[in-house]
Image (cartoon, rainbow over all chains, first blue to last red; front, side, top):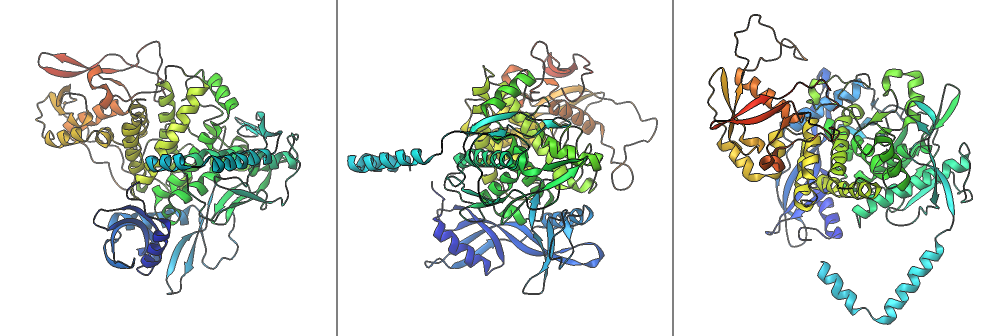
Length: 135
Length: 504
């Protein structure tokens, strides 16, 4: 099982990478040189209709070098590519037009929406999934 | 790893082993005895809201590992005995049975994995009024709703239960997908839910026997297995007929072909494809189901034991494929390619790669050349090397190295007459679709034959190139074209015209 990381170490890596803006981190494999290949999401501005900017979680891949204490020494990659950003903009449009995006601030989601736009602690409008539905 | 484990096992003292044996016996004693009644797959049958099969199953233990579950509403379990359909007690046990069966199936494929929500997955069987069901990162929520004077409970359908459970399983396997802002990723999550319903259903002996009898052993036919959530589909159809398919919510036996979701409308009636995730998911589910059917068709004996084996093997291929796939906008093709790689390396003796490839190619998820390249790296290199074909009209020399046919190029007779009218199909956005050149048109035609499984491929090239139709008749050939050696060249020749249509 080479390449599998102990769960405790993975948790620490998640915390470290969160400081760099990465979320939903999962370790793909540990490389022989000690670097770790990671899949994650990164919040990135997406320009949707009407000049509005929404931050959406965009899938990225990155490679992380760790120091001896498990801290992040350096990160390679992790920047969303233009195709993924364009995909996110289309996704927001699809959600909106198919009634799956709830209005900001709506406390109790109605039946249809699966997503909502929330304001995070930095004041950004962020697209967040709330649930999956059968239809 | 395995060696370490066996070493440790050999060091186990007889006393310790005795203690373990006692513990196992105690656990077995703690298991409740008896049976409960449950729906086999759904309360509905085809377009009807009732008529589903009732089966008797061992009493499920939800708190057990793997993937421990707790029904939080209702708060207490009714007596574990066979109850009559139409009662709350029956609904409880049919949901519990489906949950345990689905969790056991996925748990065997994902050892050591725990729920994203915590150690136990909470389930609410009646969260309110709606014709729907949810997975959020708190648990599963089911609803009730009325249609044409009948009350429908979404948590009563094993199909719906195992679909929602599938979301929770995939969230445990690849949490990154939950929030990823991507059409194909969201659609894949929905497809996984439907695949979870199909594979969990196949763990029931009665369903395997029933579906084999219903389809005459040709799995790639609409059946109780391919139809998802008949009763809920019926209920929605009463108010919005175009929102669901004619005989269920979604059918895994379909003919949807991949399109860039950017070129699709955001909404469409159920009979058409849109970029809405549930709608778009049907492309992947259709390809998967066709692959599953083709895997069974490879078996010498197509009985329920073979069907069980195939369902478990495709589960392994799917899980490993998802694990290895990069999360990119074209996620469908990523998962498909990694699944082919797993099939080629871990199941080469079973020959699963060819039927899976056929499913993905016939639904457009992988281009034929991509499908070959996914498992045959040398072919990929040859394809790049042989990409400069000369074109001589009206006979065209086509480079086909990338398809794994065993020949670098073939000769085709091209439609080379000058155009009388400047006409083209419409693009979805504005204006006409770009008109392909003659060689491109010929190649499109050839690739189309491959995708539809209409080209007879020479035996020597078969492992790499054949696209098999799992529902093709066994008694006669229905290929429309073949490659014939004429002198020193291979020439594409039509052998028959088949009016059977796409579905075959």
